[in-house]
Image 1 (cartoon, rainbow, N blue to C red):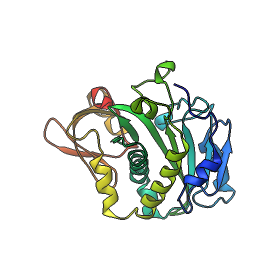
Image 2 (tube, rainbow, N blue to C red):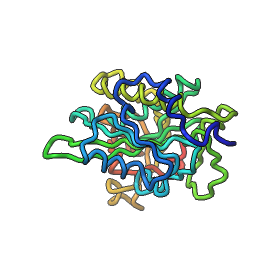
Image 3 (cartoon, rainbow, N blue to C red):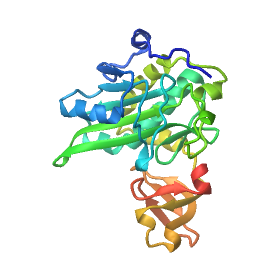
Image 4 (spheres, one colour):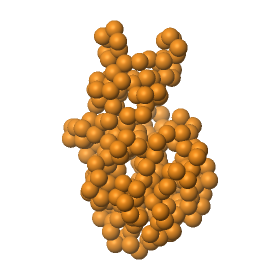
Length: 272
């Protein structure tokens, strides 16, 4: 399945975009190591909030927990947004970003993505998008934040043996190649709305309503599970909290909360 255009058409993106500040400063690269690294340098040089670094191909793209992000050229969306957030906004980026992407996909393509806690987006139980959030602080205030996004648009997962989990693309789900520009423009606008409404309860409700794991068995590993037998915690994902925590009911009946940095999902629960 080939992309509609191997290069992003900036004129079409500009025509479609209604965002006021996200993407107005737009750095386009045919090939780079990582848009996160490029955006960090841009932020340290004083780039305004909303600046975007976009690449057709990444040679060292990365996801959470040190995983690599497969980034073939001219098929998908790989970009990082520079932000100058308040404390409240940076604390809610893990809610803002997946909700914004999911809403944009639903709006432009009529698909209904689910969120696999903490930061993957799925269709039919298969991952099509991932998010990486990093930040730098000056004292007790955020200097800047970086939101890295990878969305499989016109992607054939079967052609990439290095993928370690079931994956799909929007083109596969729609059954046809897709233009990337309308979706990217919609993501910019959706992200802008969610970011500006970061403290509204509607954001949490939208994030919670798309959770894929609730009511399902999960197996968690990481620093919070080191002292557990086998270094894992098993239970049922019962709910999520407004600060982004996952609430897990253990076999003994206790309800425990886990932050994304403390644990990772694996096993059958991780394939939800």
